[in-house]
Image (cartoon, protein in one colour):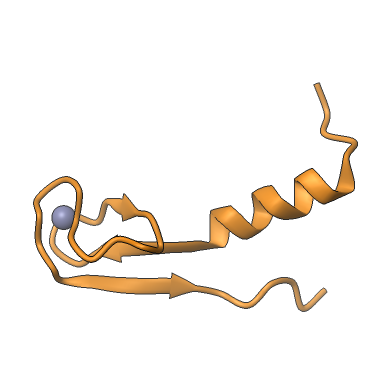
Length: 54
Ligand SMILES: [Zn+2]
């Protein structure tokens, strides 16, 4: 089922880009996370890409 709602699609794309990655176990964490949810390391890096230079 294709997503036809543009607003929802943009929201989904935004959420896909804004997250933190653990340097230790490489798991994805929410942007608000301070610690990794998997290994509890605080060694997170931000994956915070700008949206679409189309
Ligand atoms: Zn981790």
